[in-house]
Every structure is written in C-alpha cells, then in structure tokens.
Image (spheres, rainbow, N blue to C red):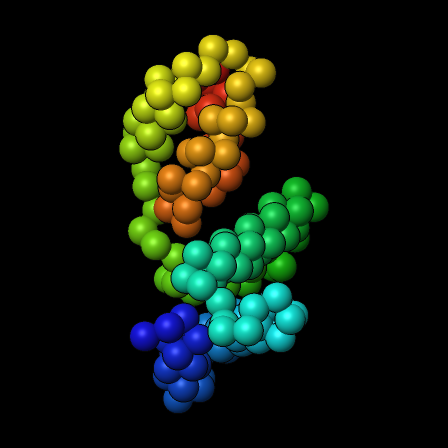
Length: 149
C-alpha cells in the first residue's frame, strides 16, 4: 500500500474519531504529496525514497517550529507542533539509534579513507544515502563531525 493510500485510510479513521491533531497532520502529508506529484517532475508518481524525504521534511519543519516557539516561551504553540510530529513520524521507516549510526559512519570513514573535516562532504553524502529515511541529517552531521575531528 502506497503512502497516499495509508494517509487516506488514517484520515478516515481520524475523521471518525474526531482527532483534530491527526487529521491536520494527515492533511498536511496529503497536501505535500499532491503538490509534489503535480509539480511536473514525475509522470508516474513519487518513488518510495521521494515520499520518505517529503515526510522527513514535514517532520523537520514542525520540529523547527516547535523549537522556535519554545525559545520564545510559547509552549501553547509548541505542543501542537510536537503532537503533529508524532503523527507524521508514523510514516517514516524505523529510526536508528546513535550507536547504529556511529557504526555506519565508522564503516564509511574506513572505506573512503577520510582523515579530516575536508572529507566531511564525501562522508555525509555516502552515509545519508545509506541511511535514507532512517536517521535525520542533523544527527548524522553531528556524529560525522565527532568522528572526523
């Protein structure tokens, strides 16, 4: 079952249970999917990888918004954003823990022979491709910096 079908099924359930947060989150995913499909780049729909990237982008947007709201002391606005993150993250592959990410980063560094910060871009590219959807870029970047420093 494709992402769009999963979203539609969960939207029906959210409407029946009158879950406003879930419904708003699912509508955001549906909207982003439709926008991406009609952008003209793809004739046969989105690939699974493109769908994962799109969902990751939605999660990141909400986390960033929540962080800004929390910095400004607006917990009333941050809470709904974080609730939406929880709903949207259901559509992402299972996220790896830091230890697993560190192992992948160490393997890539060993394979490429990376020796310093000058090789960060090369390592980041390979790790990001290998862990597509299983870890966010910020976490990967932090671990790569630690390993290359």
